[in-house]
Image (cartoon, rainbow, N blue to C red; front, side, top):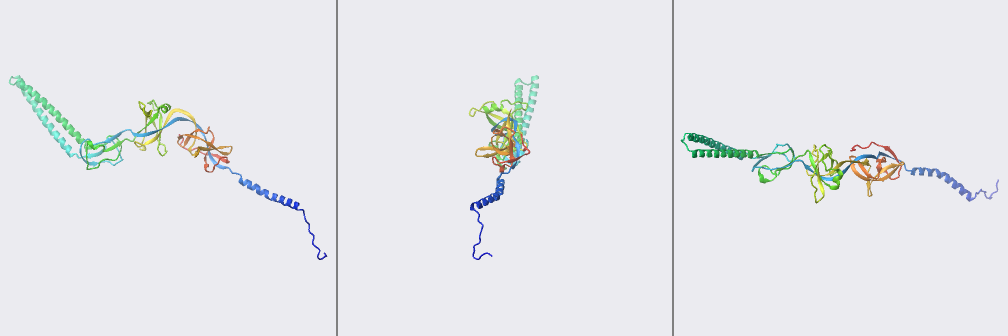
Amino acid sequence: MPELGRPKTTITRPVSSCLRILTLAGLLSLEPCSLVFAQQQAPTAIPVGTVAAEKRAIGRSADFVGRIEAVNRVEVRARVTGYLEAVLFRDGENVKEGTPLFRIERAPFEAAVEQAQGALERAQGTLQNAKVQLQRAEELLKTNAGSVAVRDQRIAEEKGAEGDQTTAEANLKTAQINLGYTEITAPITGRIGRTKVTKGNVVGPDSGVLAQIVSSDPMYVSFPVSQREFLTIKAGAVPQDGSAPLVSLKFADGSTYDQKGRVDFVDVSVERTTDTVLVRATLPNPAGKLIDGALVRVVVQSEQTEEKVVIPQSALIADQQGAYVFAVEGGKAAVKRVKVGNELGAYVTIDQGLVGNEQIVVEGLQNLRPGIPVLASPVTPPAGRS
């Protein structure tokens, strides 16, 4: 038995040895956690859709500001003075040539026709009597019962009666024409504007324009071209074989008109104040989208072509420095600053920044940053390539 009151003995280790053991144990326990943390921080590849930048032969083009003009434009006016009985159209509707538009009271003009008819009949009777009198004077002169002076007088009376008949016939024709003017018809086929008068007014030649009609299909677009651009697009000659410069239009909202036309007229002189030449093209307008007087952007395509890089418009991004796209290089996203050229439907030409065959990102752009790994997959190019 141990003796009472004797202290219990314990085994002690040096402090340095304990620290080494704890440090080693700590390292062994922390090493797997550090590896997991490092793996979590490693960026993962982002899936993106790409389209190859394509080199294509593109026709040279130039942009201008033009104005739409109707081929035919008519101001409807009254040609006789009278009471307006009816307005026979609705503002803004399409009318055909010969369609009645206004009707002026006919009764006074019908009376004028009857009066002229009566005057003609009197003149015809006078002429008939003059002929009979002349024939009688000639017969008397043959038998020496009449004189030459009387015969000559009868000849003069016949000539006067013929003149009166001609005047009466002209007066009747004038009255009939004026009667026809009481119904004002459309001189051309087109779209009629707002009427300037209403039923109940007295109208006449001094009343001004009653309404305006403009033709709608086809339409002209006229635009000034500077001397330098004029030589570039070679619009000086307008061949009749259908090979004149091609023209397309863009509206104020950026949309492209779905019909194209060709240059058909170049003015014969240069405007001295602006040093420009007026050029005109004709475009079909079956749906009536082109309105007389509207301003549009005119794109004139020349016959010469040049090789350009073409990419979808959906790949373009813009910031304060300008436009750029993301390209895939070595499995990572790379920024390519570009200078954008002309629009070609859903595509644009690139004047600077791309050389062709680059894989351009068009899908998954919202998560991209320069240098981030990407998983690229080709996608179907957009439609609308022109």
